[in-house]
Image (tube, rainbow, N blue to C red):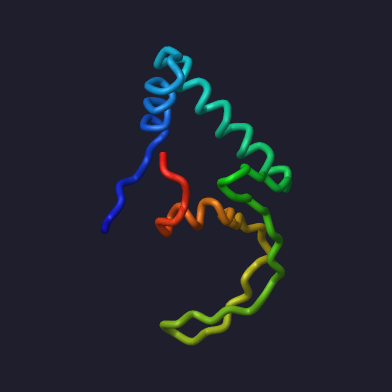
Length: 101
């Protein structure tokens, strides 16, 4: 079962339909929430959303990788990666055992 991609416009429309704000206010609200999430993550903070999950920024050290085509070893620079860990509530809902809408 192929799912569709949910866009910012879709989220704004959902806020418009369910909350009753104007379309402009709904779009601004979605943008503000996403900006705050991005800003927190960029500072290295963990973002926890109850009944949804946690976004965690992890640091990965330098390591040696290998080009699979040529076999040449290449150093991989240290970097920060974003990891999402879903909550048990979200896992249950995805697997059909959770609360309905």
